Image 1 (cartoon, rainbow, N blue to C red):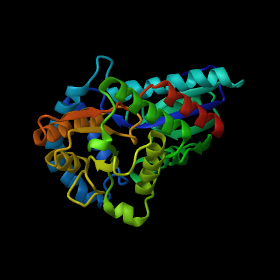
Image 2 (cartoon, helix red, strand yellow; image 1 turned 60 degrees about the horizontal axis):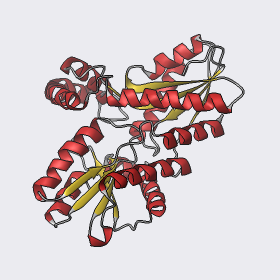
Image 3 (cartoon, rainbow, N blue to C red; image 1 turned 90 degrees about the vertical axis):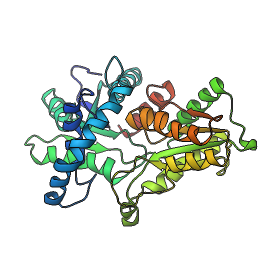
Image 4 (cartoon, rainbow, N blue to C red; image 1 turned 45 degrees about the vertical axis):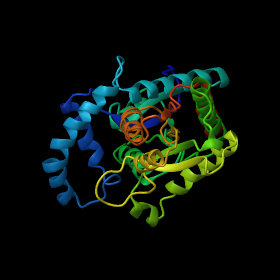
Length: 333
């Protein structure tokens, strides 16, 4: 939301998305994403050969097919919902604050990029920027990478902006409430799961390598904090509501249990219904719309053909989520 004369801005930053679902654009996006040492921490000389010679030639075309399966008329779901979040937060701040505040959306990878947005804000007269990663749980490949990108812009700037950055908010009350409302909306449509009869709910977070976890990345602990708060709000036990991890990349060990292994196991054990929510994703994207709603659903139904698989929508532009983001921003401003 652009406000002329605003001296303060909020930059909501999400992961990113290709501009189109074409193999060319997906390849360009993946090259930028997978070249970040925060994402793949291998020696650049070694990894560059693997990336260009093996990963991109095969992964880009397969990923392009997946993106086409979820693409909206307006564009990439992640880009559409992230822009809606910026617009919604901007409207709320305009109603609450006396001073005008610009709220913009940026992508760590792809466009609009973080550095491009920061330069546009500086050129527009903004002097103070609050950077808000749209990742409630801190991790090195996500929030630390955003900090890196802001620092790279600052290093080459003569006229410096004043920066502040939200580190994480895994138990922010409004965030937990928005997640709970998404679950209750799904249960209004599909009925509440019979937890007493063995139905399960999974909280599927994006995974990270085990090596990062052992090195001290607080991500796994913050995912558990979110899970504990959400279970309390929904009156669910740990047995009813399980934490799992998805989107493994590469041969190294990642956090377990894996979501796809869990849905296969539960299906083979006769669990008649599985609900899956993705609390770490602020907006629906490839990992939720394709990986969960197609791949994981298919895996579960192959093991339990008579079962029911319900994916809860991500927060997207839910009013409660926009309220929570506006509350967070207002408290930091």
